[in-house]
Image (cartoon, rainbow, N blue to C red; front, top):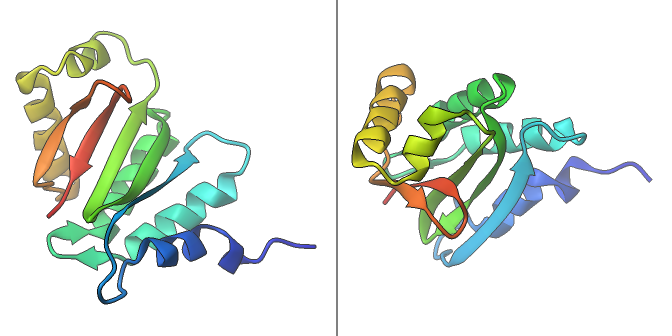
Length: 141
């Protein structure tokens, strides 16, 4: 039986509660940027592009993820809610610049945030390196 789109990413986004009154909580899904199920990645970008939530601009975030995924910078992302939108970026090994970001260097994180703002118009309310997940966490209120 063919997989229906409603069984995939879009259905997960609906279950996360974006656009539904009174929804909240902590829920995530994970999609690989360089995975064999490329349609899941494309579906996720399409679903994220439709989200407008306070200062979260889904179109800008989807554009950024598409660019960084296609360029090979991302191995996978986790997107969901920590009551508000949260995005965890898991990078491929990029050498010294990633090591500086992974060290939690405020200077490296600020430089990455500046690039997100100037190149994509993305301004999260919080950004920091998550040492337990070994990835960059972005959060919007």
